[in-house]
Each structure stands twice: as structure tokens, then as C-alpha cells.
Length: 356
Image (tube, rainbow, N blue to C red; front, top):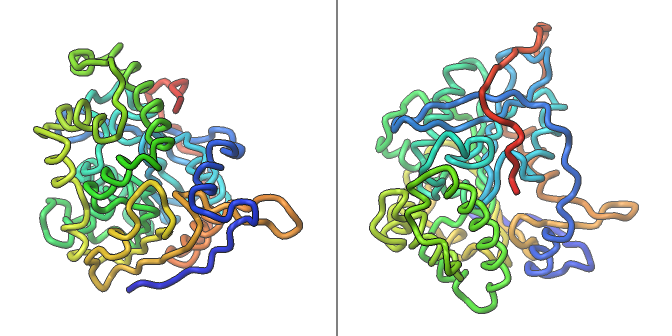
């Protein structure tokens, strides 16, 4: 089901390109870090980190929302931190996930995060369902993580992942700007008109490569110079071999969510903009989704930008407002009646690790 959503861009940012470019100029404020950390073991012995935001008196049956960042991001990505703070204020428990090897988990996993790591997400959600069995659970994935989420939902619906408890625990899911066909997304990013975005991501990713080379011999064994010029070249050099694939093409085929989305049975929304310059929005809009999926299409919002004009002046971050409203509609909100002392979670993770 495809529905069109009314988004009115800021009058000075009337195209998807302008919207997306503005993110680099206006990242917005980031609320102070108030989370506790949890370590999630993975089946191959590595671990990832989740950051739990919750008011101290929140009962265990309160709604739980799992947030997943995009390519090159982490728990401290500004949009994720702002959303977590807003949901926390509304009586929602939030888990911000650092994908494998990202953010605070850089010391805990040498393998890279990749678009097909649905088993990692299943491990996180299994831990969430086990720790909070009576809590309504929603999952929201942004950009690359949107593909991970949709792939997971399809695999669960098809019985291809051995996590039946996870399937029954999820109440609702939302994927924002997911690149469900990674071949099409890479081809889009190979275009000359997308060079400015490729340079941005390559700088960000190669900075992280430099950090990982100092920690993990698996990364140091791969060439550092010359820098890749495209995301495809980066994936060919790093993501594919370090994730166990023979090539970037094999990685794109195996990791894409598109072959799985017909099997989704959990109520799921996909928010995508027709002028998204990063993904190929047509392949997402026209993907063979099951009837459980609602595709919500906007115009001139760019890639997770969605800057509008606020009443009275100033810029409104429409996407973040919309996501908070989505949680209110899809997940029962509200504080419990029992007051409990804050849970102290002790973790060896060094919180000084940043997203830079």
C-alpha cells in the first residue's frame, strides 16, 4: 500500500538536494548523554552496545523503542540523540543501538557493520524481549539500518531466522529512507551528480577505518591508500571481505532487503522521499512489499532531512516530529504506576568514544 504524506519544505530548501545538503550545515543541538549501557553478545563471540534511555521511575512494562542509526553513524548521531530524549520524556524506554563495531562498540568487534546484519539486530531484539517481556516493542531503522530492519522482518516472516520470540515480540516497525536494493543504491551513488555525497561518506568512513586499523590487524592488512572514490569501491575493499563476501556485488545481492519484503507480517511503515539523492527511492517505493507494509511517500524532503518552516519562524525538523507522532500512534505510551529506583548498569565500555 502506497500513501502520499504532505510534507511542506522550508521555502529556502525546496529540493531534495538542498534539504540533504543543509544537514551538513545545521546538525542541530544534541541533548546531554543520560543513558546506561548494555552489552549484547553475538553468536560469533563479538559484542555490540546499546544505550538505554529511561526515566528512573519507569516500570518494566513501559513501551520500548529500539533506534538504529545510518551509515557511518552511532548512538550519538544528533537525530538519534534528539529522538531518544523526546521519547524518554514521554514515558518511553529507548534503546539506541551502536551497530557492530560502531560508536562505543569499536573495541568489541572487528567485523564491520553492514546492510545485511539482520542476525545482529535479532540478537538485540531477543535481549530486549527477554529483559522486558511485558513491554510493547517497536523498532525504527534509519537509512542503512532501515534495510537491516526490513530484511530481518522478512526473514522472520519466512522462518529463515531462528528467533521466533523476536517475531512475536515486535508490535510495529518503521524504516526511514531504506535502500532496499543495494545494487541500485550503489549505482545511484556512482553518478557524477552524487559525488559530493560520496566524498562526505568516504571521509567519514575512512576516518573510522584509520581508527580500526590501530585496533584490529584484520583492518590493518587491507590497503589504506589511495582512498576509495565511491561507496562501491569502499565496500569492495573493506565491507565485503571483512564481512565474508567475495565482492561488493555478492554483498549487495545477499544483503538487500528487497527479496525478503514480501514475507513481512508485522505492521510496518516505510517513509521515503521521491527526491532522496542518496538511495534510489523508486526501487524502495516499488519494492514487492507484503500487505502488512505501508509505504509513505513524501516529496522534496531529501535523505532524512525534512526541514520545514516552523510556525512563528525558524526551522522545524519535520522528520523527528513525525517519528515521535508515529510512536504515539503505533505504540501505547504512558508511565506505569510504580516508582522504582534507577537501575545501575555497569559497563566497561569507554563512553568517551565519539561518532567523529
